[in-house]
Amino acid sequence: MNTHSPRTVSRLALLAACAAAFAGLSACYVVPMDPRTGQAYPPGPAAAREPTSVTVVTPPAPSAPPQPGVLSVRLYPLNPQANQGGMLTAIVVDSHTGRGSFTLAYLGDTLQGEATRVDANYAAFGRLHNEVLGSASRNFSGRRGIANAFGSKGVNVQCEYLISGPTLGTGVCLFSDGAKYQMHFG
Image (tube, rainbow, N blue to C red; front, top):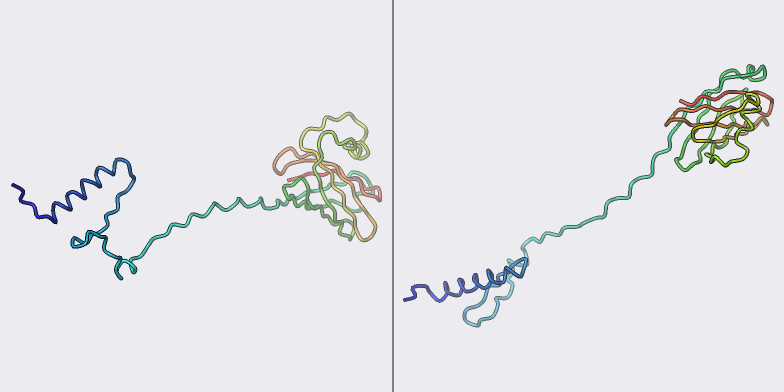
């Protein structure tokens, strides 16, 4: 003898159908049915007011380019002409693209230019080292670079350098007035 009401039997059948369908589906949605017509109830005003949640997935922001690094360079005089200028300080702003700006003050003038990394096949690298330090045989190790700057009073400078660490390196500079300097980064 069945002691369940027709409404309870309907619910149990619906639950059994959902349970059977659950094996093939990832979710089950129960739609309320009007027992008089066998049709689904139309959504009422309460359903329209129910909050819905929306998940917005935004792609990760592209990583920001590295900020320019500022390297301080000291230039030490190597000859009598350079002694007139004394020890100098230059600033290299490294844009992490193989190029940067090169600025220094010399005898009351601001010289501005650029610094550029060059590869081991750059044929002219070593010429300034020979002119400033003499023509001794050298073994260049480290990342190579050149720097040039010009001032409004007509003086210019050419430099060669080797970077051996994140902020360490050495090099030489030759000014158009004959001043010779040795560079120290860091």
